[in-house]
Image (cartoon, rainbow, N blue to C red; front, side, top):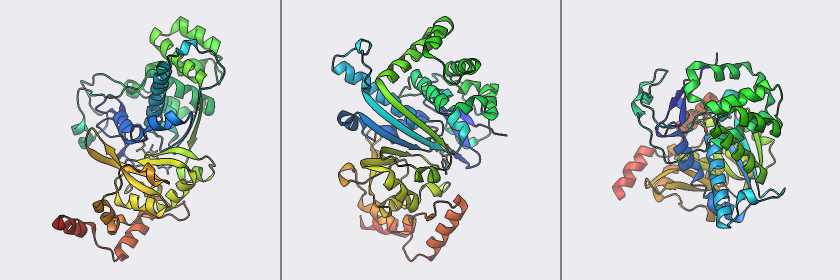
Length: 400
Ligand SMILES: C[S@@+](CC[C@H](N)C(=O)[O-])C[C@H]1O[C@@H](n2cnc3c(N)ncnc32)[C@H](O)[C@@H]1O
């Protein structure tokens, strides 16, 4: 039986724990905050969107969709600002021409997470009784009782995603496992009840995609004003922006091989290299090199020397993600063009890459399982003549 392990992270968005990987999907600090600070803000989308009205994004390890949702939230905020700078009122625009074109492909091998993604709550205000409904001391200790949120996800983002998922994966209506999870009282507080009701409505209508006019009548009559407002906003933004959404379910390594798109941004949000090395190998990165546009970039939260080395060996320029607010480096950027790297690797980072800690994971056939990749890697580390990272760190600090 499929069990979900949700909890509220400290910014009021829902996080998940995976007992299988014995790892969290989202930082207790804040699932939404993490998406913004590790993927959306470092991508410097402002610069890109100033020059382009077409964007292609690949969200690897979509999970419950924070990176895609945060991108959409950021994009539509930016779109509104752009219009107001040009003194254009969106309600006064009357055109069939789309102003922007967004393409997002998402990949995850857990179908339930993908299906649940539009229902996940992101802005819970107070979490007085923020207790886990599963046992995990480590996570409990890190949870606050009061939320602190810097970013707010607008409700219409979930509605946009729901509409797109229903259109692309109509099987969602008949999926027993997913429908059971959605109705399970145990999880109720983690789901956005407005999108849940909208889903029930679509389902009860017995059609895959409800006619807009009928839906509007329904909304006016039955729904809260607030949902109706969010729904209208979703419809309005989709009218002016062509949003093509392709959620894929399966192993990222296999699905990406078939993909001929060239992406401007690739978000790589896999579990840590020690838990899920198959998505951090030189060979997978070589494949991503083929999927990245010449002026594109890959963003990851990982600071691992082995990951950085794998990117270098796959032919990328590599840099670090700098967080101004915390004055900390919190991830890695890989690009085909050097000028896209704003914070390069330091002497220390480059030194570390040349130690045993920098030996990358390998999976030439893009088909090995995690255990085999780890075994192969351990063997290579054991047989290597490189110095250990601890020895390097000692020497490096001694010289400074
Ligand atoms: C750290 S979580 C990602 C969190 C996600 N970005 C979100 O916003 O919820 C890692 C995800 O990787 C997925 N995953 C693990 N191995 C995979 C594989 N080989 N191919 C595709 N997805 C995979 C898991 O199902 C999980 O959802």
